[in-house]
Image (cartoon, rainbow, N blue to C red):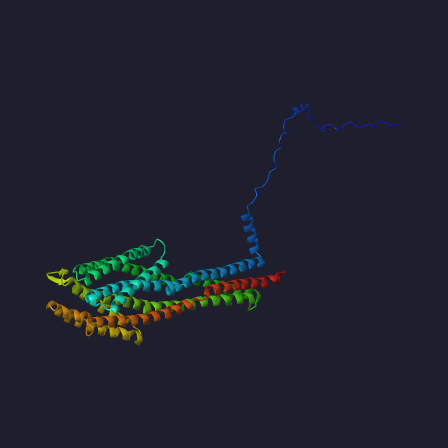
Length: 484
């Protein structure tokens, strides 16, 4: 039989509180059929960090450990050595190309421009000499004129082939190519009328001379000036020191020395083979850069000081002698028809220009004597000075005969077979040609030495830089292997 337990009543004052009853809440209305489900609130998420920030944190955490620091040091050393090699190769490639242009392009073109001027001036001189001889014009004079015209035409073709498109030189060359056949046509007309005894031949020759003096020679001089400017620009590109490469080389050596000192302090090991190899290659590159460029710079500067400067002065002297000879001949062709008033005095125009040209010749010969640095270069210049002195004496005697009305005697003293001023002019021209050939050889030797000092440097530097970077990486890797 089961009995219901009897409980005693709770003690007074300890009754539990009775919560009020909560009324039943109505259920939410059911969603109509076909409606989308009610979205639930998205869970709270933290914003995602960028890859850069995560990489920076990884780098920062790696830098707090010795292996991480070594990896960073190895990467920086390799990058610095490669940058040093790349900048060195780039700068030396530009300088080697400029040095090669000096030797094989700009200086030869400058000499060609001077030859164009000389050939035109000499052709003008030969034409006037042949005109003075009249029907007795020698085959030598005629051949000299034709040879000068062909030389000028050939040099113009070469200059046009090497000129930059749309450059000022191209326009000057085109102008000369147009004027050259016009000049030659005037000379042929002058010769034809002169052989027939018509005085109009002298007018044609003077007109041809004016075209030469006022149009063709100024254009040729302008071409010569432009080519000299290009030569100077090539020198300016080839000779400056590569300061950026030198600074990077010093920085690379300093960084490698610091890395080896740090390695010694932490491990008490004097040498790390990889870092020593990297330091050796960087040192070789830096020494090659400094010594090679110094030798190249010295050779190029020598080629300019004892080659280009002398060549320019000798070209100017030769041109002055040609202009003087042409004006001397035209003095007899014009027979006083052309005059020039200077102050209160009236002079024969061509004789006045002769005096100005012979003074210019004396100045240029004196400068060439100072620039000559050996006996072989000085001897022909000294001989030309003596020829010029004798030329002035004979010219004065010829002018006296002409002013006294002895035209034939004056003509014999200018274009005669013996004792004429033509002999002095030919001697001056021959000695200047000899001096030019000597200075051309000196230029090629010095400029070639300068260019050869840079041969192989860009490629060699690039290879050594790669080896140096590999050495730095291997050296740091050897140190890292101790932590594995």
